Image 1 (cartoon, rainbow, N blue to C red):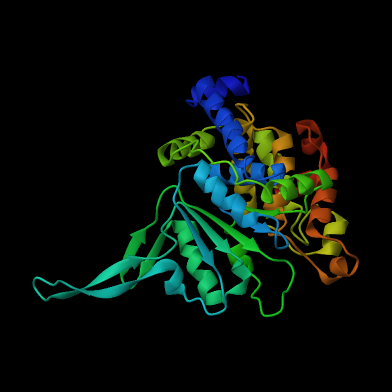
Image 2 (image 1 turned 30 degrees about the horizontal axis):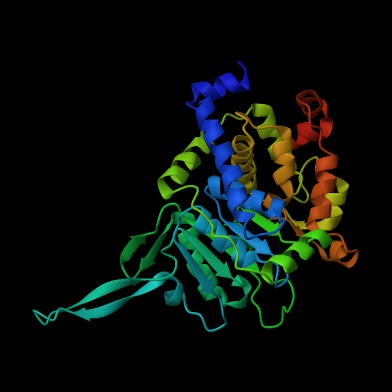
Length: 354
């Protein structure tokens, strides 16, 4: 049975696929009214959104990270909340708190929960590494369980719920690097790079001229939830799953069949959540591009944003200027893409057997 036939059996019609593909084009068109360039960043954010994940963006100040996220929320007709993380921010400032409220007619007092900024569809956690771990940890339950617990009561968050956190890679003095457990909650870590000359020229021209165009809503909350469910119905072949597994398992130091350069350069490898996000992201990318099935190229495209914050390079790598992206690229180059090569290679037989 072909992949497209399997997709149709799973309830994905050509109209469904076309709807998500067209939605992507319309969202990019709306973002293009405000944002210049950054196509890869926007593409990865949309993949993350429709995979029901969360995203961390890293880049120097002034690259329109905040503007990009708020514009995305407008184009999706979703409620938007920005939290500016600071050293004195407390967990209750993020999740909300219970206050005592008096009924004027009866004089009776009771506790009432006042929602914090987490109760929005799109939450921008701006400069998340500038707040202490206690407040950073307040996001963990929200991101994973989509709820917050205050006192003895649990409060469900809005659905869809999408957290985008930003980090400033400079001025590290007085900051609190995210612990690995928190970073693992983010599906992607996306690098926001400087614009090209032509893009920066256009930024300068637009932002010093007349007011920007108005962004129109493309999708609503119900449609986004429908498309998120559709992504999970996309079929993926066993070969693609094995390929994703082979990439992730090769990051684990000391494992059977792991390349020598990984043992030399990596201090800690990625866990099982990396495989899940590679496959989910591959499904979303396939539909966004109008396809019914996941390809090896989808997994390769997403390997760096999924793995770069889950794989820690050691001191030897840092001293030589080797980054996690460099190691990931070498792993991709060392991994066969065909099913026959993967099954016949003795090194991968050890990886799959371990």
